Amino acid sequence: MDREAYRNCCSLVKIPRQSYEQFWSSHFVDYIDKELSYSKFFKKYLLPNHPCMFSKRFTEDWKCRKQWVSEEGKPNFQKLLQDFDETPVPVANCNAKEYNANPKQVIPFKEFIHYWKEYIKNGHSSPKGCLYLKDWHMSRDFPEHHVYTTPLYFTSDWLNEYWDTLQVDDYRFVYMGPKGSWTPFHADVFRSYSWSANICGRKKWLLYPPGQEDFLRDTHGNLPYDVTSTELQDRGLYPQSEEACQPLEIIQEAGEIIFVPSGWHHQVYNLEDTISINHNWLNGCNVDIMWQFLQNELLSVQKEISEWRNTMDSWHQHCQVIMKACSGIDYAEFASFLKIIAGNRMAFLNTCSSVDSSDYPRHLSETFTKLGPFHAAFDLQRVANIIECLVCNEDFKRLDHTTLTLQPEMMLQQIRDTIQSTRGQHLLYQD
Image (cartoon, rainbow, N blue to C red; front, side, top):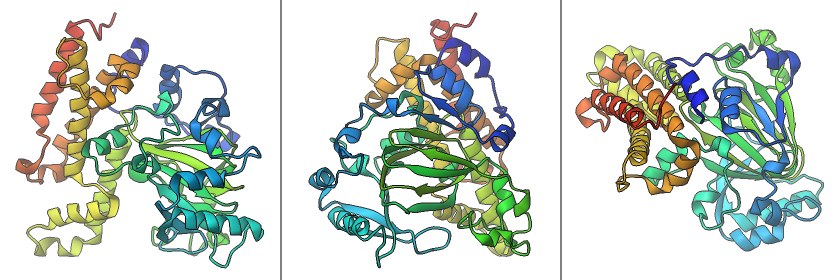
């Protein structure tokens, strides 16, 4: 991030996001074929939460595009089997519905490839249904492979930084599916951003800007499983579906990377036999959207079990437990998440102004160095803004603060001291 971008956004408490009307009126997104500065991407796409597509030139040097793809542009099954053979992988059945998703099973990789070959041989059909290898943590399971490099634009990634620190999970995935495989209507975890690169094959994306999904809810408040279903024409079941905009339809070719903004609901189809790599990620530009999502999730839980409120001394704690079971995080872990993100950036800025680098998180050194001190300071200010919201939140106040790793007032003071100190060192000098 450059000084101008930092100066323009460092004081934002609430990020102003432009209307999404241009997307459903023009059905057009920017196509990026030339080098784009990080600051321009930050200001034009991350902050306003707008989608875009990067051309195949941004992935042409990836090892997976050379090794996982045949000369005909198809999946290289032989090479993939050499690399992964007996590896257990998660596979979904696209012809079966389980709630609003597809049921999954874990099978050996070679079994899926055998199925895929037979599926192609039989004209893209099988009595087993249409199976889709998805949400496979290949990067975590095979860190030595280095088959791709995260583009600079997507490296301010708080979500995977946090889980890497805990060493228990990540949100980096590989998808492999035959022609006809698809993913039902959804928004990404915690309303995160995502980027998705086609290693081979083509996808069709149907995207709805934030807020449009509410017109697609049924009379019970549930979102549709398939937004192309004729069920949505039933006004008795979907009373507001006519008010929804037409989705933004994007065809993604082999090698291209799509940037899906925070909170955009989408449905995705593989138009050919396709391999893709996907990351979910969060940072200072959309952490406020995550925080709003968490508040909405807790409110939904509170409404669902409101009848027991006066009969349980620990009702609020139970709401947090249920929320974590449903969404994967509660307020206490969100606070821990903020603490780790802030701590890493304070360590980086302190290192920039000191010869002592003993506390610096080495595994983040390359990313932080590329993004620079202005970005670290922006991140800290965004964390501080959210912590100030936490302090005022009644449900957060009800937590047992003696068990929290984050002590809000102490963290806020540390952030202020760090930014003031680095300004004093002229690292964040502003004219």
